[in-house]
Length: 420
Image (cartoon, rainbow, N blue to C red):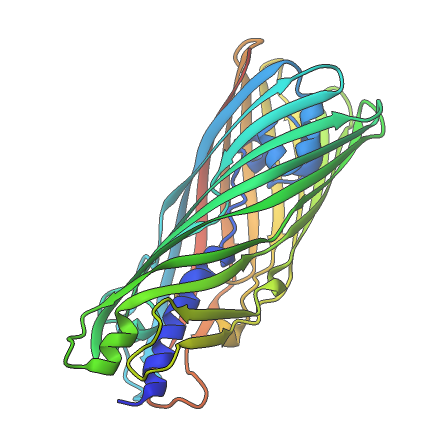
């Protein structure tokens, strides 16, 4: 077997796995903000969960407050017109490519004095599960992808003036991944597990032009992960070179993107409010993914190093929203958003059947008493059809597939807030 086949198979498998964690940013970190499609999330500060988007908003949260909840994310992705691009043979359609998951969150905040506020937040900002049939024609490029993250952020906010507030936090982020693929016709299954714990930061500014109008800026830094783990396969020691490459300790560097957000919030009157949001996600920091064997030498007697081009692009997220107080207890929220995909056609992989999308959201807030309130949000996301061609230029011996994806997502959020 050619060495280029084993190197390309290894690189492709790791690329699609870690790219998936970077590619699917979970915005669902507040049930209240979800109802407005995250419009005004960096300026709203309706409860302390909004601190995920802008820590400076903590200066609007008096006393001690706890908020927590989660979003059940139910994607529907189908791969149709699946073909082995080398032979032209038609493969079976794959239903339910992307599996459901839950994104939990919590924040507890405390007012130290008139100027200083502190908080601790827990979130899951990246993650997704995709799964194909074991024998589908694109199995070389991915069968199962299960990626989870957990981020804990201690943060503080300072009320510099009556109008200006500043905030900052340290992100402590853990990433775990479990991936499977094949290496046809030599290997039926390759399994990779890895994890990493690394740091980032967030910054925020809130400017309250008046009691009715405020503007926010939020920044979450790039986090540089070095994922370490191991790879195991169904090869036997008799296949010496392939067994050495596909059964070893590995590491891969991954930079999750920085995000810069601008938000505005305005109370029209005692019942109506409007808000808007713009976010720039710097996916272009994810241009290459480098792979290194943690073994001293492989079967060829040389250190193993590989680099794969990813070439993602920076993306824009736009949203507008409105809220209407039905009475003293109930609030209705509505939102609309447009979200660009970082994945271009020639770089789309089966693990990331991603495309541009439109968000439609609705939410309800209920003030049970002066201490306790509840929020619920529903989102329907309509995604453009996405085409896939996994052919690797210059490597005709490596299996590749074509397919067309139809994607949509429903998300159901519940949250509560308690003021002590």
